[in-house]
Image 1: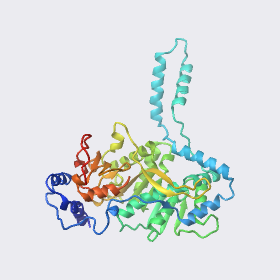
Image 2: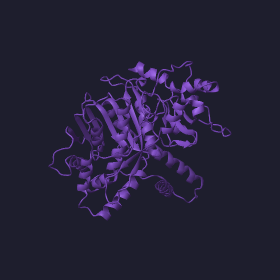
Image 3: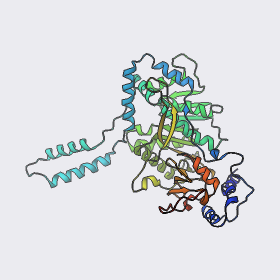
Length: 461
């Protein structure tokens, strides 16, 4: 299997070489170093059109299962519409603008800096108590006040109305990444940490419903667990579950021997109060991971940085579990295990993706929406088992006879590639033109793309 995949990688541009002559052949050789001859008889696309090339991973509009939509509408049927709409908007804005809590060490550093600053300007009559009050006052004004959300029945319903459909779309897109790239993977068990309304179980059932036989949903809020169970039973407490094999728990399984094929934490790590808590939870989740650990957060700088910290923690954890000695690697979205180039850039950007979805048709919620999210999928095994094609990290800019692609490359660098039919072959050009934000571009060495020249006119196809 791996040999066949490697062969397909090396023969990627075979169809384009028919049209390459002279300088074009040199450009082609630069794209695939070490390959001087290409088998013109092979065809990496097979009988598929370019719009279905192997790197296409984006999805059209995601629709929630009808049973889930009906149950959500039923639960909000008797609520005042105006009041619910305002609460949903307020909670959405709050969750999107939320930052991570400030660590105690950072607070101490800031307090010491402010104290030193005040001492330099201190009046001789100022007492130590007044100095302390001035420092505390300045800290309150300049420090983000993180508060833990306590979900009762009322707030759980508002959260469902605000985040059920968007959360489902983001997790469904993450699961699609695994299914599209490894169609033979058929998980049997799944654990969802911070399960909330249960959208992960619904997304997993929509993806692998034929093979999954056990879903463990863990959430410390009893109100959330009760709401998720009602949604599973069609909006009532006594109905028949739409998905068999779903179990609700308030605590993680204690036994270190218990592992799950897929472990998920969606929008839950940001709810933990400190880095130490996140570290403990992540190590526990990784020990319980048999194949894939899927982490999803908001597509903000805070969400991206949190996921990169989690990624570095798992990759750098030298303490191997005695029950599972397989190493860890990044399955998606990064095509490497090197430091994130988005964070190391002069102007750091959030590595995020967008998924269109059809929201639950509440009266304020009828138009299609986009969910912006960040994700990291970690896996056990060897990186050689995964495609190492570059990831498109921004919307593709399509211009006459050329395409601009911003790529995260296997060498750990960002690359701005200007793809044309003349310089890179018709097949690669067409593949780039039909690709979208979040897709993989099927090239072997994208770092060999020549940098775009401002004075150079785009050549004709």
